[in-house]
Amino acid sequence: MRYISTRGRAPELAFDEVLLSGLARDGGLYVPAEWPQFSADDLVSMKSLSYNDLAFKVIHPFVGGTIDDDALKAIIARAYSTFEGGEVAPLINIGDDIHLMELFHGPTLAFKDVAMQMLGGLFDHVLQARGEHITIVGATSGDTGSAAIEACRDKDTLDIFMLHPEGRVSEVQRRQMTTVLADNVHNVAIRGTFDDCQDLVKAMFNDTPFRDRHHLSAVNSINWARVMAQIVYYFHAALHLGAPEREVSFTVPTGNFGNVFAGYAAMKMGVPVKKFIVAANANDILARFFDTGEMRTDAVVPTLSPSMDIQISSNFERLLFDMMGRDGARVESTLTTFRKEGSFRVDQGMLETVREKFDAARYDDKETTETIRTLYEENGMLIDPHTAVGLAAAKAKHDHDGTPMVVLATAHPAKFPDAVEAATGVRPELPERMSDLYEREERSVTTDNSLDAIERLVDDTLGAEAAAS
Ligand SMILES: *Cc1c(COP(=O)(O)O)cnc(C)c1O
Image (tube, rainbow, N blue to C red; front, top):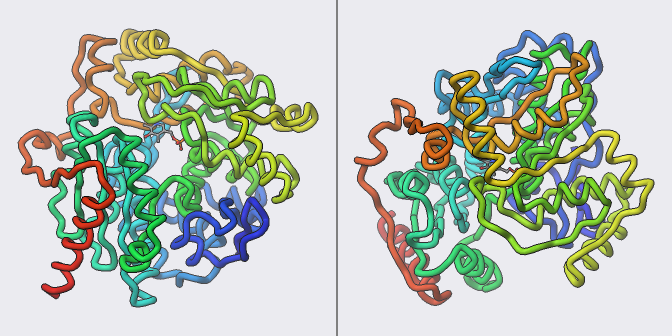
């Protein structure tokens, strides 16, 4: 399997190169040159597989021989052994043909663990094979940082520096990062905002001598391997709910469009999907796009579902590439216009084609709270605000024609306890294995919002490690 860039000008790469490089050199995103195909007979034979065996079947063609089969099986097994009860994506029927797919039973209680746990194992394997070491740097306002830290902890082949804005992440989110005391994990609180943290990360990448000295790398949501790992649970849900004989629909609470793009990939590979509902909070740029064909940025407003408070959905470029007939030059000129003018429009024919499979809806904080309250009153279940945005959209867009609707439940309610308590009067409890989170020892260093300060910290930390070993 070869990978091509959505902007058409970067060299084709194999899986291991795509894994380590993240963004393509022409500024595009890597996608498989063609989609692996699973026939109806293949799908029937996959129905009885365990989640891990299914993951192996789905991922195997994408890895394209760069990792041997036994190693890939071991990476998958290790990744998902961190999930509560070994269940990665349990389906809960809440009635009316609506099913919640709970993706939050991993170590940091959000769906990002499903992909990150795989990514950590893949990085470690490929780096060990090459005898290389990398330094991952990232900025986080919450979920991504903790998932990345849990995925990278205790791996000799890498160090991870995760920057968060001091005093501006929730206590659960901070503790999920700072209580990981592994030697290769370095939490840095920056005296500044999330944007300052992101700017520092960009500046470190732009400082070529520094980047080369430490072999900087990233685990952000544009990494193809993250999308790849997420494709598996779309197969899993569809097979459990009647595929290939029956179509299934999915509602996906969306920020960067990575998760819903993984669903689209599953469909391209043979999973019969009737519709994808893109669910947005007040930051509704994608919902507006699917309504009108115009992508136009707006100011980001904070909501109860902060992991979806995004205006530019980086993974959307992968869908745009297919919408434009895989014409990289056209994608590039469209996105250049977008960057300059803050908007672009696709033609009517393209919009109509994409709307055959995609629909969208948006809900504000008041509707999110009402959705959490109503489900609690009717079923006694607690859901988090991101899942609630999805459930509201699923209810509104559900056809009631016998097609099952799967809502991706992306975070555990205890990750957002204040919003859930405000809606229901009940404070969701952390799962047993994490119940001592508030007592665990924390470790992090605080630095000024300056490139010099953060680079000195990285140099000193890694220099000391090199001297000690
Ligand atoms: C990251 C995240 C999302 C959005 O996922 P994308 O892949 O960025 O669309 C939704 N819900 C939660 C809880 C998240 O952490």
